Image (cartoon, rainbow, N blue to C red; front, side, top):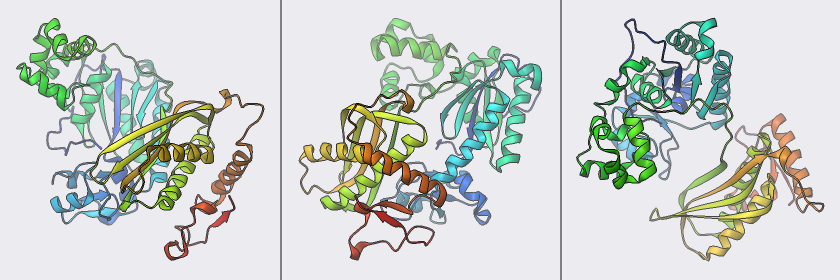
Length: 422
């Protein structure tokens, strides 16, 4: 979720020479919140927060009305409600976000084959080859915005420029529901007044270092001698920042993009130290990771475990497998061995996460002559088929069943799930 609340919004309304602005950055507006509002018309135009009401929940997304009160992503929901007590809480539904993301990305692909998704709700498009058929870049951006709204009911903001960096800056400035065109001839003038923090790669520590040198704006950085900048932030980073500050960004739109990792994590309502509870949760997360890998025909070679303690101290450990896998049970067993190796005993844990890294196409993997996961692989494929027909959660490992005094009554839709022996 972006941090803008729309207060400094700027859009293109007057005629402009957009012939050089062939790279578009399209960013959905408050995407998760906007998707939830499709089913909650009563909450439109009001401060709303996507998250759970529990004490450990964090803000996933928020409407622009809520952002004006200072609500931001990753902020504890409890803090968000102190800033904006009247905010409406909207529980998240990830399957909806994926569904609408697919619809939006399909629209982009119908406009140009040169689409580079950055995340579930944003992408770069190179429309230089689409001008002949669809018109100028500005016209194409307007067509995209209109189609997205007509076919999904959602709004998006678009930045059009000659480089990826400036296009992304422009889309952020156009939010919400706007279009900003920055022609190549106006790029430098647009960049120079911005704070150095607007540059890609400038985090809080880098910004502090630059400001100690007296470099507070992009203009300051652009005019600084390159060798002085490199002495402060390093040779490679210094050159990159100097190029961006001077409007130079040679990167093109990259069509083929593969997920670098697949993971799921859970923040507990209360700190957990019970090994059985942790084991069930880790198995559930591992199964979700495995299901996502299989749905994308991917396998992974490295299992990563993330743990956050009650004092917010966070550790991450990983384990590389001899053979890549997308079997949830194998992922769980490796993750559990990593956990046991930490020797945490009864240390209370606030958050736990399981992630698969070093991904490759499933068809590229070569299984050994003896496959120790063969039985579980077939079982999980059966679960995938059942889930595709009846919904996920209707069948699963018996290990995930909680003790009777802690058991759930059934799946979310009220039907009782069936469990297989493991």
